[in-house]
Image (cartoon, rainbow, N blue to C red; front, top):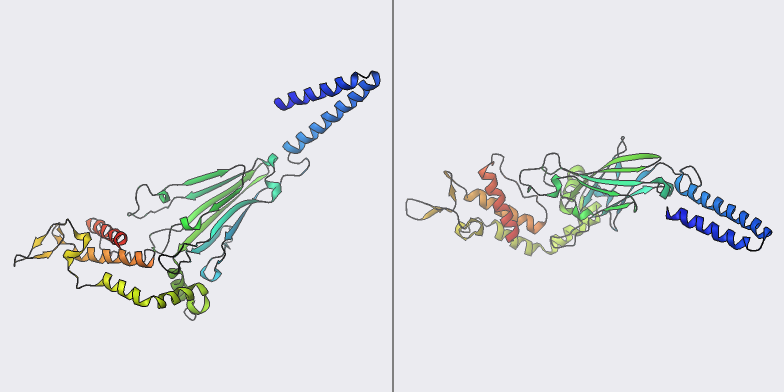
Length: 329
C-alpha cells in the first residue's frame, strides 16, 4: 500500500515540476510518468511472477559433510540409495576420553539459486524424527523421543551439529533420522537422511570386523593414532582398569551400595550389602558400577550390558549402579 502511494506521489511531483514549464513541459512530464510506471511494473513482475525475468526452478536438497579430517574408510561419506535417500556414519574422532569431540557436521541447503529467489516463496523444513522404539532407560523428557522441527523461509542453510547426534554403539538406540523437505511455488523435494554415530574406538572395531583381512591400524590414520595413544598411556590405563575391576575389594567400600539393607549371615557378620525382595543384588550392582566406570574412562556405552534375564527391579538397580559408576569415575 505504501509503495503504491509513494509511486503516485513521485509521478505527481515529476509531472507537476515539468508542467510548470508550459505545454512542452507537460508533454515531457507525461512521458516521464509513463516511464516511471513501466519501470515500476517491470520491477513488480520480476519480483512476483515466477516466469518473468529470472525464472524460478524447482528446489533441490543439497547435503554437505563438513570437517577437516573426514574419514571415508570409517563410513564418513554420504551414501544415496535407489530411492534417493541418504545415509552416513559419523565418529567422534576422539583419541581418548578427554579429547575434544570432532564429529563432522552436516550442512543442508536448497539449490540452485533460482529456487530461492524472493518470488519463489521457498521454505526448508528439517525434522529430526523421534525414535520409533526408545529403550526403557531413556528419560521421559529426552528430546530424542519427540519430533524436532525447524522451518526456514529466509536463510536456507541448516547445520546439523554432529556432536549432538546420539551414539549408536548400544544396539537399543536407533540411528538418528532427519526428514528434509524443500518447497517453492514451482515444486517440492524431500529426502530422508539417516545418521549413525560411533565413538572412534567402536568404528575402528567395526572396520576390523567387516574387513577380516585388513587392519584398521594399518589402513586408517585415526585408528593408528588412537592405538598409539593407548600404547603410550598403557601403564596408566591398566592401573585405572585394575582398580575398577578389582574383585577382591570389599563390597562395603563401594559407594553405590550405601544406604542398602543388610542381610546378616549365621556368624553375625554381613554377607550381603543390598538384600531386597528375597535376593542379594551385590553382584549385579558391582558389575553395573564397574561397567559404568569403564565406559566413562573409554568414552561411550559399550560396557553397558545387563544380563538377558535382568528386568524389572533388577534392571532398575543395574541402571542406577551403572550411571553412579559413570558419574563417580
